[in-house]
Image 1 (cartoon, protein in one colour):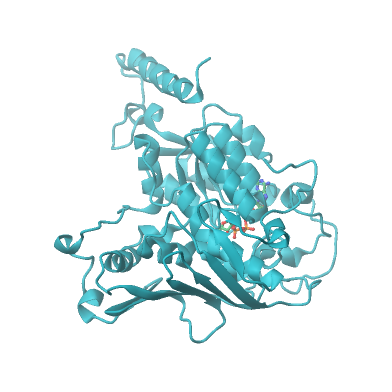
Image 2: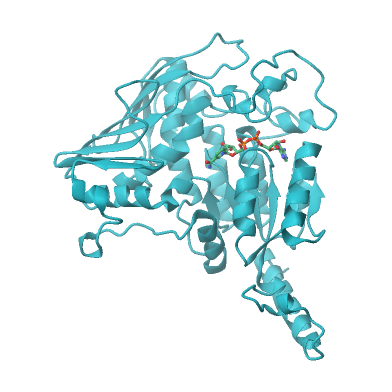
Length: 441
Ligand SMILES: NC(=O)c1ccc[n+]([C@@H]2O[C@H](COP(=O)([O-])OP(=O)(O)OC[C@H]3O[C@@H](n4cnc5c(N)ncnc54)[C@H](O)[C@@H]3O)[C@@H](O)[C@H]2O)c1
């Protein structure tokens, strides 16, 4: 039996030979031969995209802008979103080549798709990612890695066991000012780091403009609500907690803490060199709406972590003393980074574009663009700038923080074994019960 990688290579070889065979009579279009700077179809990475909501379209456009990538399929359980996806892709390529799916498993079954982009709500991350990895796809998956720690562990295992290339939507690592900040810290310019602060948003944000649509109704005909809920618990359809605003309900998402942990905590870890470890102790307190509120995720929170080397890190939303973004405070200075923001104790650091080469004893991974980096790594089979285990580690403090808030206890975590120590009830919260027929992979 040939493995999937060999089948795919053979397919490329076959197409290449077939193209060469017909090239002589000059009837092959220039684009097929790779002229005009566009690689031949046999050399392009074929991609299927799943989820056409807030994030899916932007990711897809970024991939379509890369000449060596061809989006060939789109999937969504909302027919209106699916139609928008297909018409956007076909409009971009000026053809009718984008296949439409409402069941991602049918898309994954296609042998002529190399990679998938998954931009679906968090309740779906685990099943889809694990199945995609097993189907031999390389995966661009969104942050946070998953809705629970157990799901994250399952994704890491499946991606690694199946040798897949994984890029996480934690795109801040591919942006200059975050790289500069992390490199300054990692190269010791601020001296020994005494504390790290991660400031995230608070409250709820009405992304979909549906906060007043709180009545229980039948789902719209265009939406397969049963499939949208998937492995989460069945709840009555309320428009205000479906598209985009699902993140404010723990049945599907994880509130601001988990929505943002994969961004600013990811950067904090990068600067500290903590990509292969995690906090040893986590305490947390939060303000929650009443349990049966339509949006029930914490609106204000503070998580105190202590890493194995003793360094403390605070993650907070809605606390004035913790500024938005990532702040590293050292014995010799400090650095603060956020989107479009860089400040530091030394003006020279603010002015420089990147830490000069001579000062880079430790050079961090440079990515020419987050989506570009994924495609490059699909070809080279090297790790991306945000591989699956890094995405997992970056989100662990958020998951443990939530568990600490829910139990009201300090959580002891073993970052090597990846288990909560001596607290059965807290350990239970590392996973969730799946709604049948879906089963935790
Ligand atoms: N990297 C970033 O900066 C960033 C920003 C926003 C969102 N995100 C992440 O992207 C993911 C999607 O978030 P969003 O805000 O775009 O959500 P969204 O609700 O706007 O869109 C999700 C889409 O997925 C579809 N969907 C749901 N279940 C599906 C299934 N089983 N099969 C196919 N399609 C399905 C929905 O119908 C919807 O069209 C989340 O993980 C979120 O955290 C990342």
